[in-house]
Image (cartoon, rainbow, N blue to C red; front, side):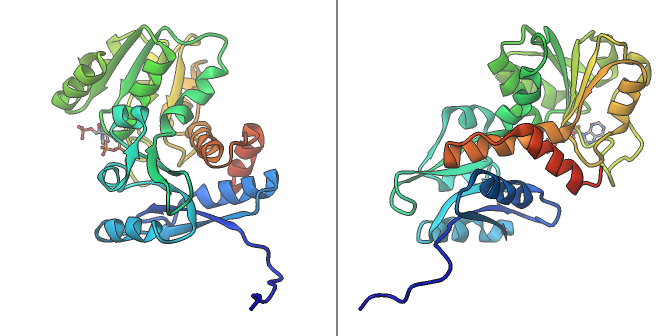
Length: 282
Ligand code: ATR
């Protein structure tokens, strides 16, 4: 018997797992991308509490899900549930993208990390790669940043963290210098990257992790936070003539790298950023 013809053509299914997912901009970005690039696919949010993660990944192996974004709190926990992890994601110790190698459901479910490419994307547009970089914070986000700086071949990298032992451990892993939090402003870096939540809405609003006096026109401030878009860290840097890179650039970059892994297509980054800016009301 021939199945009845459907008026709706079949679509490929993608999505995001994380918890909570209320604020995520990923569905907007990828659904826009699919429409923009003429791909018959849809991207949906799958809110997944930690205790459901294992079941969910098992279910993905039996469902027509072609790829997934992975966000907090699953970026590390998902790794042992996969068939393989790409070497870069392995060096970061976190996965933010799942890709099927071979047929969805039948091939291998492989974890990648596009936060690294997302972090690097706005730096690739600079006239030259910064020679000295200070990274603030030593959490999961700092690992992707350090891996990115390593990929870019930055010569001098230092990191500072409120808890010095965490900075030391990460500095050893990535072969960079660890400096005490109180001495962070003594390190003369061309680029300073904030990976702490200081300045994020609801978490230390109005505060910056660097003293305002640090900034000069030869500095670049890069905040991976995009809520708010211009954090006190970036505002103070801009006020004193430094260049600034906001967290939306990294978000758009990591999303575009996911899109490329899934479809092989390059999203127009400027258009993607304009879309996200409109969504944030900026
Ligand atoms: P993520 O995985 O998103 O990077 P995380 O693992 O919670 O998040 O790490 C947050 C980082 O911000 C940590 O390095 C944390 O410092 P500690 O290791 O001392 O906890 C840093 N951080 C958080 N709040 C901070 C604050 N008020 N001042 C300075 N650093 C802060």
